[in-house]
Length: 84
Image (cartoon, rainbow, N blue to C red; front, top):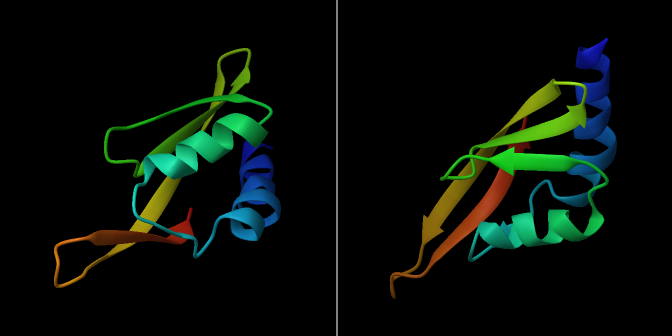
């Protein structure tokens, strides 16, 4: 049952709104989620795992795969490539 919920979140929320977004700071994604997400969530330090808290001790983990590119001036850009 929860696999279906997870897949719906990936396809209808994350892929629609955030897949392939490019950021100079990964925490900008967290700031945006804070504004539009209807559930509590947490994440690890490098933002590779996002944990959705549905209540009643039900949690769904999402793995965030980032592509990182670095410019000649040292500035890094992060692109959200895949959510699984």
